[in-house]
Length: 284
Image (cartoon, rainbow, N blue to C red; front, side, top):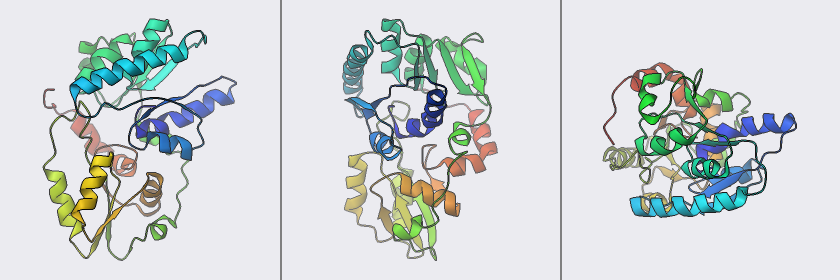
């Protein structure tokens, strides 16, 4: 598990595998709310490594360190399968250990990631809304690609039960317009440019007396930035799950990219997502 969304995506898969008698071991990367979500869902895990931040050099160093640790974790344990959502360290370690690996993805323009993970994987899983021809440059042909219908959010929300009291616990005034905000993934390779729109939107929402903006930062740097702004209409959350409860219970729109908090909006606007998938992306 290398990012918060992966916990939610893989949880039902892990539960089904264990229900069928399979043994599943979970490893985690220290990044954003990944390990906190694992703890909240009661999923035992072995922490291995940290995120490398925005620096390409540190990313490469941390990738090497995590891969080495993953090899040590897996050596001599006779694993039959490795499964990840976009994890390059697991893909490399699995190949070196001779373990078949399946890699899930939901964004075809993460070029650097796919040049490693997709090429090394035995199977690559993508939503069927992603045209297969976009994946061929990463060595993904019909024999390797496993397209699945719909969006990954639809799978992990099937058994979700909302908490109608979540907003009260967060001290949210439901008489106001409530918006849940997830900052952009500034440290990800697929998001190399800063987003000038986000601070403007946050400033607009955070100074409006008719709005309550619930913000869940991805990193400590983002948390410190939001705190320093001291915006009166902003509620800064300590964790991830409370906001998801609030979203599902009250149908609140989210201002961010697809991640564990904006799943409701993504599903409601599925046609918009599919249209976006058909548009060319900025070269990376």
